[in-house]
Every structure is written in C-alpha cells, then in structure tokens.
Amino acid sequence: MIAILAAAAWAAPEVDVFWPEVHGRGKGRSRAMASLVAAEMATAVREAGGTPRPADEGVEDCPSTGCVRTRVTAVVIHQEDGCVVLAGVGPVGATASLLAPWVGRWALGRLDAPFGEAIATSATVHDFGSCDALPSSLRTGRPALVSLIQTFVR
Image (cartoon, rainbow, N blue to C red; front, side):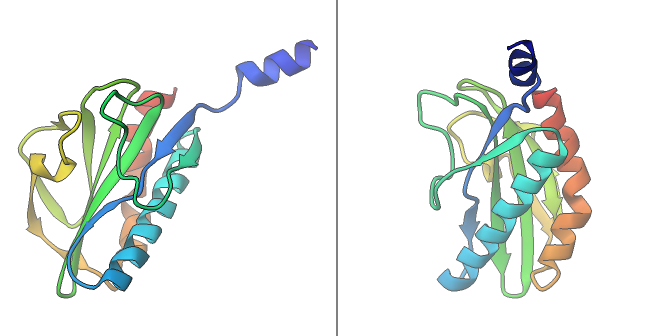
C-alpha cells in the first residue's frame, strides 16, 4: 500500500499538448506540419519530466473558463518554402502563456501572451527557416522549450 501511494505521489504531472495553429497555404501540408510540431511538443513535455496529454486534432487551446493542467501550444506560419514556429507554455487557470520562439527568428513584443489571445499576436516574424528543415529545426530548438516547460512541471 505504501509503495502504491509513493508511486502516485511521484507520478509525472500531466501537461495538455494542444494541436498547433497553422497559417499558410496547402491544407495537406499544414496538417503534416501540425502533426510534426504536436509530436515534438509531446517529446519536449516528456523530456521536461511531464506526461503529455495530446488534445484532439483541431483543439488549439483551453476552454474560455481556463486550463485544468499546464499547457503547451504552438503556432506554425509557413510562407512559400519558409516556416516559423512559436510555442507557448502556460500554467493552470486562465493565465498568460510564456512564449518560446522555436523555429525561425521572432521579435517578441512581450514575453507572454494573454489568456484567450492567439500567441502570435505577441510576436513578429523576422526571419523564416526552411520548411524542408523543419524536423531538424524543431529538434535543435527543443531544449529551450523543455526548459520553459520545466518551470511549470517541477
């Protein structure tokens, strides 16, 4: 009995991983990009010590009443052959998400995005990365996202 309670006490916290918002052309390519980014967000959650709870496809954020768990979301913008990704990580409740530029170069107008607002409204794209290099760019930038998630799950 004590071993079961100890295991429950040390269970990794669950983190909601929302479906990335994608802007750009090509519905088939957008879905593939969103799926790739969602998988990388789930990997970042695991590396941060959390247990990812993937949202259904198309569910991009918490309900208007607030989040019941820490959350990770992202926006992907692709234009011709260029891609950028901005991630947001937020705590329980109807609170702001901290921003993490992930792929490409972003200028952050602020370090967080108010709850209920699209995270991209708090940032400006300065330089697009290559869409063809998106998988490797996501892996390269993942440590910064892991660090941000750890502020909420530890």
